Image 1 (cartoon, rainbow, N blue to C red):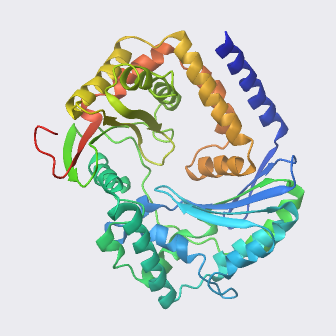
Image 2: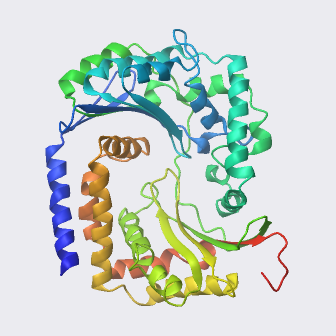
Image 3: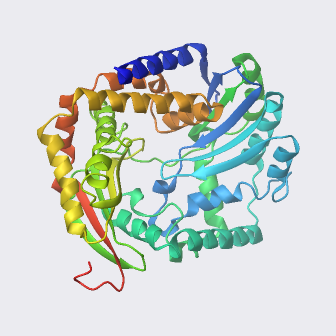
Length: 444
């Protein structure tokens, strides 16, 4: 009864949040798409610009280029010296940063709301007048190389995951790391970054999101003032991504200087963009929650605290991508438990769900948990801007954010069972055993 009450209350809160937050959309003649989310609870704003250009757009010889250009966007324009962009933001009480993913690259600024003209002027300056100096480029390349060394090359677990992804997603842009393969990254040249900027950092390939204490009447003339004269540009044609066919079961063993062994297991499944029936996205979200949605979920209850097979284990669904989604399990065995035993225990959990639908109590628990996460995210201006920008850049209708809870509510226990039967199958699975490099066969 308590879970039902929580779910009802959170659902009402989410509905009220949507009703209180008007969202406006318009486009400039050069193709720049603009989304304005009004949230007048506090005098703050978030300004984000999203480019549909991530590491999946890189050619095999230029891995890491999207991320490296993100760094160069802070290294100077015709009117701003290296680092001056961020110093101006800080001088006026703001903060700024950026991130690169497989599917997109995004830049953001956060301020007190009266700084909106400044935020837009600074962003337009980079688009119009970015300068990529050869010496600055090579200096920043060394920074990125060091970042890769610290985060991946000197981290056996990160290195294992990178190698696993390369096998799990063959023939796709998701098979190489966002930061790039080390040897190819080291060979990147300034002209490649200039070419990437000219190809992808154009209004017709961008979405500008402004969220917070603003109105459309305030925003529109400022956007037109700073962005309307930018040329639309031409982005190279890119194929529409679809659900990848089953590649067959793949297995690998990785011997690395890890302290404890680990198990990785991932399935190629539909994403929200590639699913023929969009309900698959919401069903797989529920399936992930049943398996690993807190202390009451099956993996934690049965494998970690129950049978004590795993020191830690989890499952997750990544379904907001331009290409196919992934459904992934990770686990670390307890002493005296082999990776084979742990793998079989996880497969038994999948088989149990494929045979018997989850209980009504499990379904309500997962809905309440996922709904709570959505409500908390929307409580932040930054969270709202992230949600709008991500959906838009993935080619989805941003209004789907407001329909999430309703679509989740349509998923039945039988749908979850059928999803486990259909998608979590051998021919869609890649499994990796990560082993200490000096482990003897009996220890493995």
